[in-house]
Length: 376
Image (cartoon, rainbow, N blue to C red; front, side, top):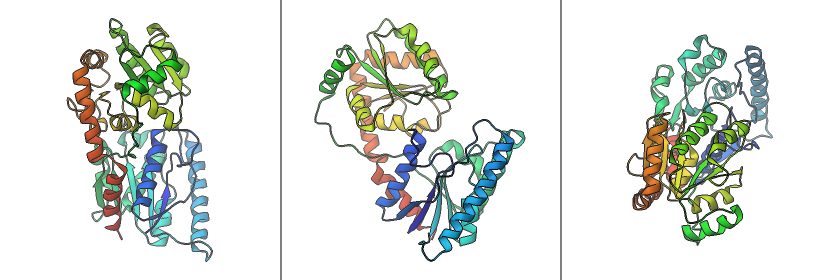
């Protein structure tokens, strides 16, 4: 099948790393693995962060012109057509101005993955985007959900014949590093200049203002309750809230917290190999690709509960899910795993087994392939 892929929030080749970009690439890879021909149809971003009406109207107009350009190209003899349009991540701040019109004109199925709907925006600054989300959902032949939280809110807008599927987040398997965790830790501890004998915690997230910044602040507040224990925290990430995050961790001391910035995936994997516990409050998080990668490396995860994080972390089995934004509960869960190596190792083993059984690229590819073929 020839599939036209589009991500209105952030195209797969965007230079800024994020979980959103990662999952867009993984979806394309999964469809390719299943034998489909996948082509990115446009790099047009419909994203409006601030909720500016004039900007949204301008984006709508640009989207209309982009749709015309794509249709003209698809109808020309020089361009091979597509059998299905696939839009990833649809919400009011980044609506799809391309897919519904193009799919309707070409008479092909329109598929949406990870769509959400926020009724409170009916009178809010993103109401134009919300209306377009409604339009997209009404025209969808298929809807794929990766976050259970979004299922109920989109139901009223789906056609009676629209097919739905829930797919667990997935990522690539990894090749064994050939080193034990202790060996990886010894190697990195030399470059960091820190102690390899104490438990290493790790957090991976961009330092953006809003929920990411609040998660970092909560993490710092929770760790401040654990200064009677020996531990080190590796922080991978950067962004416009970097100074705020640095200030939040400052009271803990430079001998405990090691920010290493944004790293290439291979280097990030080295740090995951060397760490013993992934800790992230995950305030309002959809699911968190970094948590999935932590499980892939055999790390237990302590995270704040959301319906999305619960698709990855099985509470009491592969880690702990604490009450959202509860500093004391989060600190208590981290303390328990720092102090109990046996429990830490057991949950880490369970985490890796869960990943291999349910969250590999091959597993996601098979599930996605069966669903897409059912639409044509």
